[in-house]
Length: 174
Image (tube, rainbow, N blue to C red; front, side, top):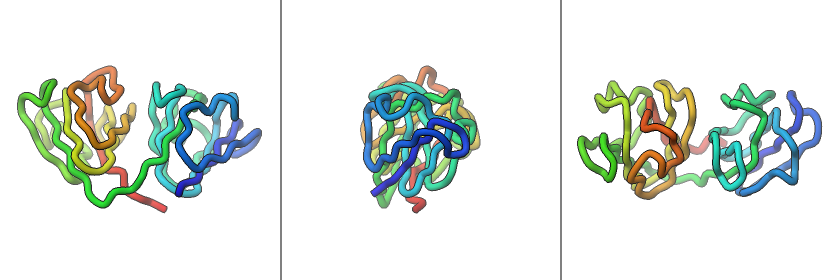
């Protein structure tokens, strides 16, 4: 189970909405989101309805303004509770359609270039677990949530470029 509370104003003020499951369109519940409390679970938030636009990974904690979750603006229009899995395994490739050099990971990678010797990831196979890709090293920049499956090109995980600087497993932090 998860629980997240969205607030229209900073510092947990204004109209609020409590959510405990995924929601493809939050637009009718609040007009803007400037602070969030995550009571339980790991969540992926999206700038636009239907899990589109900028993505933000949040775990249990308090976020008094949108900059605390590395937000680009005060727009949160959909959310997804991320379920916990016991193991994680991911293969990344230097080219589209699982071609070129490949490397397999089962743990976090704070700096892709140091491990993989490439700045870009063009495709990946996610066998187990849930992962977050970040554009910059050390888990910074735009974020992309990946569930188990095949991603033949970077646009399949919602990215606008193949630049991946770091990635980490989603683990439970209740």
